[in-house]
Image (tube, rainbow over all chains, first blue to last red; front, side):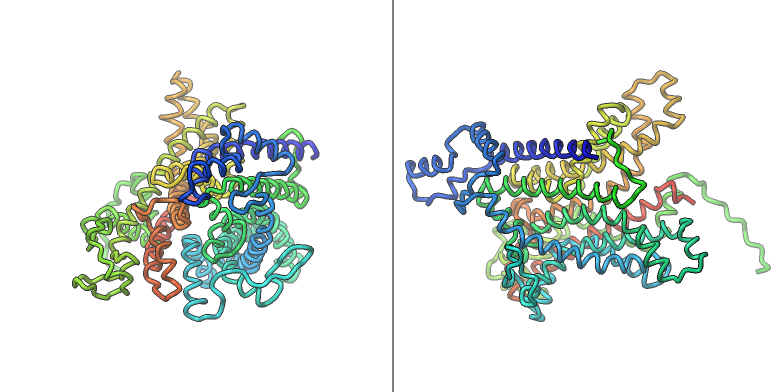
Length: 325
Length: 301
């Protein structure tokens, strides 16, 4: 096990290095940040001064070298726009994204597992068919368009919920959290629902497929033959076994929810990391874009690793072999 | 039922005919296929069907902007689905937008399928370290959500039809590679490959003429799903302003253009392009779902 974890961490470093080189190199070729940062009337001298202040007058390779050197000490450069460390700017926005992702996962699991369970237990009933047809529709709905529809119906037409922005925050363990109060939650409901929708379809389909597969296995038949009440057979025996593959997917989906927050945050003007990176791409704020990507890629690899480890802990049949990896 | 029924002559059962029969067995799939066919036809013939040319800036009249569906413009032109902020007829814009969206989705799908399938089949055929390396790269890439990979690439590449196709190919090839490899692994062990080897055929010929065609059905299934994904992804990226330039408005861009008018209740600018996008993706998914069932040998009757 330790060998496996070490190998994976070494691989992580390699992936981070490749990503940084790719993004840094690529961004260097696109546009000139000085153009956007200085006053259009600025003369040549002022432009040169700005470029020098940001280190943009040096050759690309040297800039990358400086970046790498800083990166090893946790310094990912200063944002051109905010004038503060890029990592700090991102970490400040992270709680907003994470609370949105958390709420979205909660919604999709809370609805998806019961619906999938039902559809799997009575696969031929009318309700089950409706659920499955709904999930195909959910797969096909363009998420960003649904976001617009949600704003249109619930904010513009009905006026029940605020259309954009984040509500008042309260501090919890040093983090600014908004979903703990009703007023804050009101702002989070629409974006979270939007983010949850696509995952909901996936979880319904997955749960249903698992239920149908597991119901045919011997342990289920024995549990029923023992005369256990239906509630126990489903609630304990079945649920335990379908949760194992679900956890893998939930782990991976958590990552994808965080990535997709880019879209939802843009629609709902939610001040998280995703909106930050889109703004930064347009403002050619290279340090923030590079830092965002490195932070997300790192988060991803960490989530994937945790899922793999959790999986082997939960399911005694899966043991990570030392040789593989 | 005393009358003797005339013996019906069974139609000769070719595999293709059997496939068609099974495919159109499902009403939902037939509906999806019809919808898809209609959408493709409409997109292909958009220049002949569309009442206005949305690209012709000279024809645009700002006086006609933001008209509600059904309203008549000053020049007497009527707009079935209303107009956008520049006075562009929404119906025409949607028809042309469908063209762009389908083109990007299909072209990127075909390139990704070709590249991915070749990589996957070659990896399976080569085995050993080559296979391990290729599959490792595939695994790592699939560990990241498509939207993130595409975002990185487009931040680097900039906007443009060619660029978004490159980004979509980079996002998708890994799915095809994985599918092609697992299909090829199954086929590799079969007798006809052994026979081909026994005949002394070259490796290239075996891979291209024998292995690849037999690994095709699962690739087609993955392909339909992926094209739907690609279209949705392109729309999403264009909506964010990262995909296509505004000179070639795809459906995503049309929806984005309507965003600013949404708050004032002018819903149609965003609503109808989204509906067209939904119909396209839904139709492809319905066809793909049925293809998966029909082409899956495990579920064969």
